[in-house]
Image 1 (cartoon, rainbow, N blue to C red):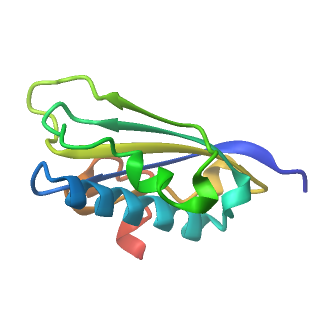
Image 2 (image 1 turned 90 degrees about the vertical axis):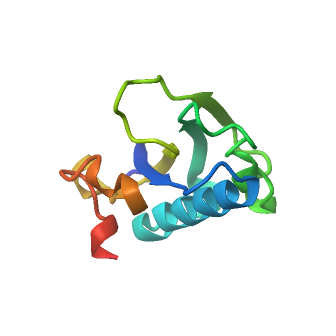
Image 3 (image 1 turned 45 degrees about the horizontal axis):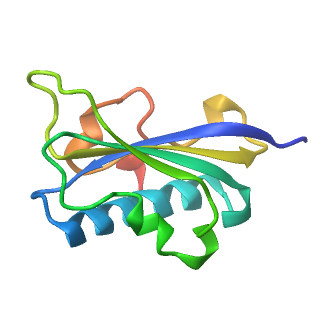
Length: 127
């Protein structure tokens, strides 16, 4: 089967705006997304990352960029739009990667307090 570029979605939260906690949470989510979907570093095309406005102590992409195997992968961070009552201290990832999986077979992960965001897609509770 021919591999196509697919999107892997995920989100996680942190307890506080702390550089190391943010990096650890991003690394955990990113690694799990790749592992659960059988994606190798060479199959990753790029990663879009958003963070809620209450997180500003570091660029979440730094956690991925520091890994040698992802040094040349395009990464971009943006601020999530501020919506009254929305989940706070949340980081979202959209990882684009080559895979032979069909869209319905992609394992999207929503961890920690983000686990309720997309119950229809969330495989995180099954880990």
